[in-house]
Length: 274
Length: 352
Image (cartoon, rainbow over all chains, first blue to last red; front, top):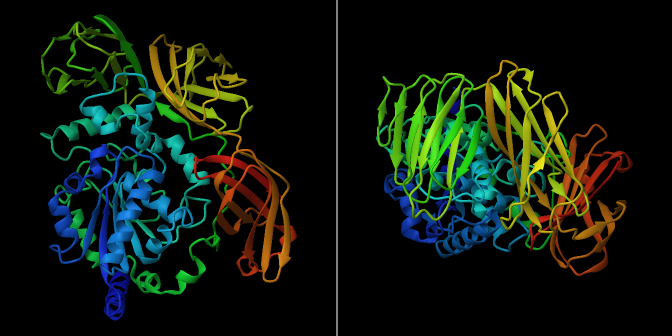
């Protein structure tokens, strides 16, 4: 009953405010290779159906951000902010819903937590309605710790590609590093000032989504080797994804699938914002 | 149930004025937020796995505790051939995929290989690793027992280390509730630029805890130092085990020294100030966190400061309205100077 009332109110409010607000969606991907700075690679990260579903058949203006997926959050933040700033101004977008996956949720937290770091941050923050954060390693990822453990080893191949090489973005996501950043630089975790905009988190709690898919085998392997406590999606534990913001829902889609609209229709859920 | 009322609020222009570019940003802690002291160290990394590295054809011992399955991940530059021998006499030969019925399975993708022993015995497994002649790097073998109660918990402290502070390396071995003493536990420091230093042997306290104190880091590299811990031993029942863990700390640059926190009411603001001796010029974030005597978060403020080397005065104004009528003499202050050109804690002081 409460949900129905609130949704009705939301529709009414939106009908009023939409007279002056132009809404848009921004997708911010997670860590990976440097080639994620290329628009086509960033788009493929999400998959066409995720973008289609979230934007209700591409009817909501959207931006798929691309940034170098090997960099620290403050470097990535600059690349992300530049694209959002130009896009929102060029298209007069003044009501932005942010969709993030994995490290993308940490990058947007950097922007939200450091409004004076970059002159573009505050204008962007002012236009953000809220953030939907899928499987963000807010307290780090035990899988990222593994990359540190293996430091100095030959790091290549299928599973290491899933963990991430010992790049700056992977270092950023270790549990120790995120403890450090949460303590000093980032807002939104327990005991810290609140973020200026609300984050709704979505945690992945499944591993075996598709037995023929190599990534699924890899994520299940990582979950076992990295020693993730509680439920996890093969890369990020539930406790970490839910350490910031309000729990929206959990999904059985693993880390490979919870950025897509395939194993579970996550894009359809995101589209309910519009 | 999500979001509805926030929509209108988020579109309201009122927020713009308070957070104008270049201005300091201030706010109140959410009701019920407890002020949190900075963590002395990161949460312990809990490991049920161990790592081995080989450079040539080798038979690698894989001790298992007999609690559930074992996952064995072999990582090489190019495809490495392995053969697994179980203590019961079974063999998963080169290239065999195995089966659920045999309790042994092999998964391959590119140069990676994962073996799954579905249920282990508390005994030694052996992995024969055939390393290709032309392999340029090492072969790394990770063996994990996800269901095992035998864990290695590790951390390094302080998480934020100023120059000159000693470093503590901490490891704890437990099998469920039982402490495991008598193991050999070592650690290796890896600098931010990837250099690995000599093994350090941790001292067995006899209660499952192993520690070492390093008076100074082996070099002055600033940034994140990684620590790899390795433990080998046997349980009181004679079951051999091995575990590998990790930890990290941030070696700070010693970028500034902060003096005593002063406060005064100026108009409708509480001015928080201190003298700073800036060693390294650059952009910094000046943070003020305020809590009450019971350490309930009250208010906060932050602002960017471009500082030159030498003595300077830092100040930031907190609206009295954000203090909820509290007596400013009764408040707790935590003031921090954080690097922005180079990320790191330049200094932190508190006042009761």
